[in-house]
Image 1: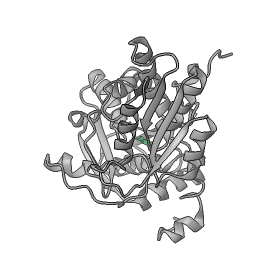
Image 2: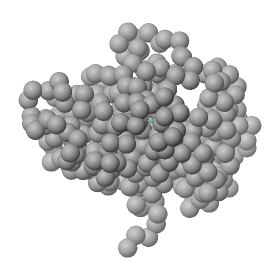
Image 3: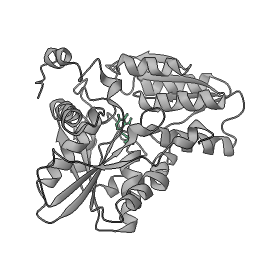
Image 4: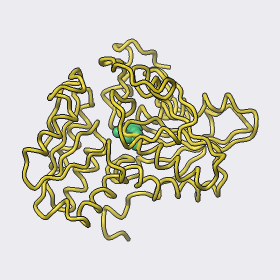
Length: 325
Ligand SMILES: Cc1ncc(COP(=O)(O)O)c(C=O)c1O
């Protein structure tokens, strides 16, 4: 028996891919983060940041938690706020699926939807909107997941050690696309401390600025509305993102991510989001380059149910010019 919903965060299963990995000398394991109670990896960072905010007095009784989110952090905040008795206000870009918006409302949170087309310096950009709301709201606390070092720390303290233990120290490569970068930065740091030979690989959607920044050291001009996958890629450099742990990056298309997510559901029985598809696509691309035996670990950050009206809908796929695969 578990006393508290928050006690069910973490200790997620690590499952070996059985059918879609064609490389017999390589094992690929996926960490099923949709087993977390609000359905994504973000339960880990949100609980860690809120625990810290309460302990340090930044979040007080009757406080209002505000955050910008592509949906999963919002659901985690909304769930956490519900059980702990705080009000939550979440800002999100309008490209986020309606399922994800409604999930936040189901937990009792207030949702502020902002135009995806708003450039990063616009007051209407969902990140700036959260900041201005926090500044104008007394007794509010903003998680600031993009720039908060507690975000990668949550993965350094939980997800990283879990992967190390679950593989019995056999992991050789870790793959994760990033938005705040908390996942790859925290897990990458922890694993490299256990074994400096472990490599971290980061897939990134075409249209995100991270790939060009990693390759050139120069922050490119962000492109508008260029990719549909939700939750990874960025139009600014997050302070939670530590490129010093990243060894290689690959660029992927929406078709790569959605096609692989659909394949994972059909062939492996693993029903994850588009970023899980991108991560497995990246793991397979990496595997194709490795001649020695290897143990690749990646994450399925969230649940496929969140995307029923999008890439798990055949008509939507065709309307968007994607193939069903
Ligand atoms: C579905 C999904 N996958 C992956 C990520 C990326 O995780 P991180 O912010 O730790 O880089 C996010 C973050 O928003 C997400 O929502």
